[in-house]
Image: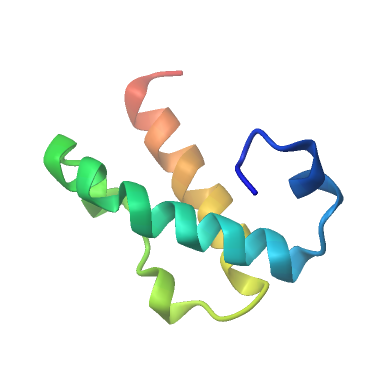
Length: 68
């Protein structure tokens, strides 16, 4: 499942968190290269559904820093 997949919206918070965590693991190197890694929380510190809110917060912080 990917972030554009409508099934992700219908999935349980646990599955959403799992999918978003996997996505972050995949894209983290790109965030590091662009210098945005300092804006990201350590996904390993947030278990289960708790990561969903952390992911959203991290993305909001990055968007704010871009001025959007």
